Image (tube, rainbow, N blue to C red; front, side, top):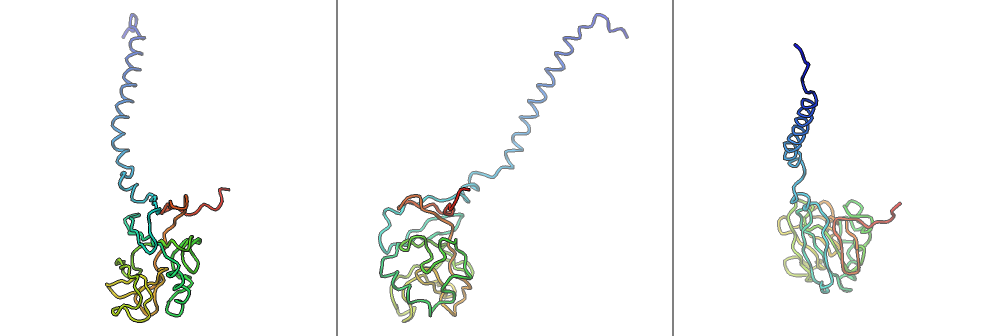
Length: 199
């Protein structure tokens, strides 16, 4: 076959144009498949840190927020609550929180960065029920040794005002303390640890 008189520039143009159209079409087809592999905005938000303003949290008040689908408690403990914590060790299974989950910044007698502000995940460490906040002292249904804290009505576990479990109850460990940090004196981010060094 004789190729004389064939305009190869048109053939080259058509080949290049077809290649470009094919590449663009492949891109359009690939985008939906690739985007479905990304986590949804709801899934990303579920694990995202939570910014909490505690400027209006009154003394003795408990604030509840959600983080990663879990209830998180923020309790403003007045001096009398902090004083009670000093005498609780004989009643507790793990007073020093050696067997419990908390950031290093909260591994102390009050289990918090700032003594007044207590932050904990509001789920019993036994079976994941949500305890109730019972700040009253020695109510008839909780006994004379009750000095205020958190009571799980499901199986009876008791936790003091620092989330430490009483001895002899089903919960195996103290309430979990989530990672958190202060941005200002009244703004906390739950879900991020304190940045100790950037190096």
